[in-house]
Amino acid sequence: MTVAELIQELEYMDPNAEVRFASQPNWPFEYDIRSVTPEVSTKTSIDPVVYLEEGRQIGYLPAEAKDELGW
Image: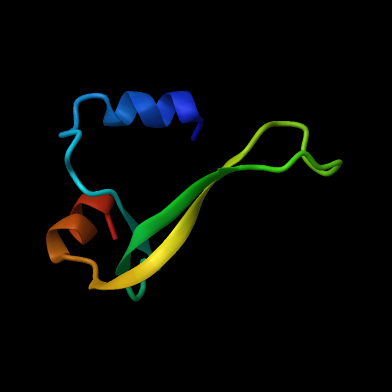
C-alpha cells in the first residue's frame, strides 16, 4: 500500500477516530500507533518507505474487526 492509497482509504473516515493496528490473524491483537517515520535513505531500498511503529498492545482485536478483516 502506498501513502496515496492509505490517504484515499482514510479520506471518508472520521478525522477524530483513533487509528489502531491489527496484528496476528491466528491470535488477533490490536495496538495503537506510536509514530510514523519515513525511511532513512539506505542503499538497500530503491523506493521510499514509511513505517508505522507499533505502540502499546491495547488488547484482543474485537470480533467485528476480525470478521471485517476476514480473519
